[in-house]
Length: 127
Image: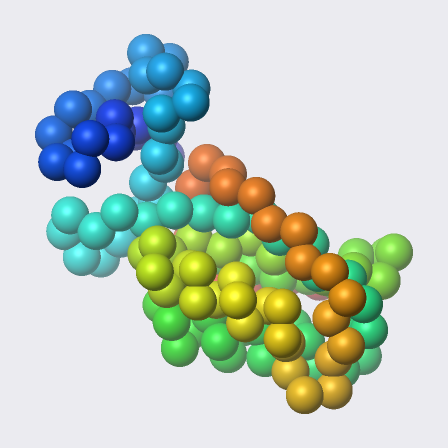
């Protein structure tokens, strides 16, 4: 999927290709079913007691509730990795939820950074 960049003046009218836009001014889009909705993506790593407590299941449930697409998976080092794409406000709410997690989880740290968005049809548990 081609990535488009928008110069963030608040009006959304100035459009550039990824290669021509200033890197510090890039906002990335991912596919949205609604027109004119700015979607962003986050790549997160969640650490603590987050495996064996249904963290991935509840993460998927929360993502679907908020209209977030992407994936979640366990890592061999005990962390959980999340790639999430959605409307800015919903994605921020989703990231705040990652800090709490489900009742049996004990989240110690969440590290999220913005990434170029990808197109996903739903939110899946991949591993």
